[in-house]
Image 1 (cartoon, one colour):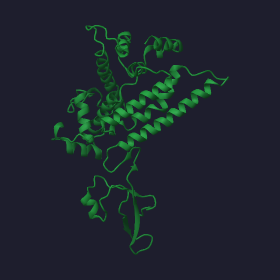
Image 2: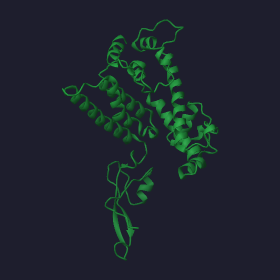
Image 3: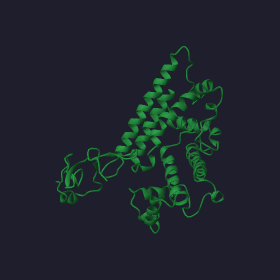
Image 4: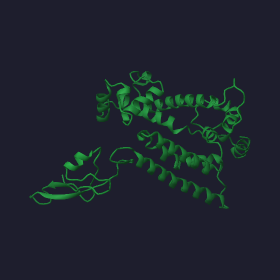
Length: 318
């Protein structure tokens, strides 16, 4: 097999100064790195040495990896791609607004356009984001992006609840629980599943390092009160894998909706005096609507035929 050295890059993961020095490099904070070579008898029969470029970041199947696997670069890239998607939605909305042959987008259409072009960038690699600060940074960017798309600026809690966009911290639990379901139930014969079972069989959650993916998977199950040893869908063992995974995703969405609903309703309990703030006022007004089973779906007024009028009335009153 011949390797194309011109397209090959290498990243040294978790390399301490002693290992870095042992392979010919010097411990320094700058971007200068030692050269790496590949020895191969190509294209002639005599061994040749080919230089391999060493980089400080590498895009591998979507996320951008850094030497310490902190996923900070992946967070930055997700924000950049979301900003590009935001510009696309604004361009489409603007062109239709001033096109005499077409009607202006309704709020429901604007929301659907945003969810299809911007929201996926926040969710694509969310399961790999380790830092709470990075998740909060993504959440803040999502707030402003959604507000800008719908031209509604104010309380973010009301906007997220009405549009059916749960907090990223809860969505991350869903993605990690789905990954655990794949590794242990639907695709347990794969190499990643074998490695996961090997390294996590006898380890408690407290013995796992908080920066590892294994820890975040186990922690998500703990937060969602899921027993990893029990099959959540025993009646669907004979169903196709995709059907089981889809059913489990819907089950998790119901669980996340319940957790988010409890979190929202606790902001303005009925047995306490009325709290004078915008967030609590919204919970007081929208308490009945928040009882809907799936909070991943928009509020009723965003799904009705009169959404253009109702959204104006709802946001003015909130």
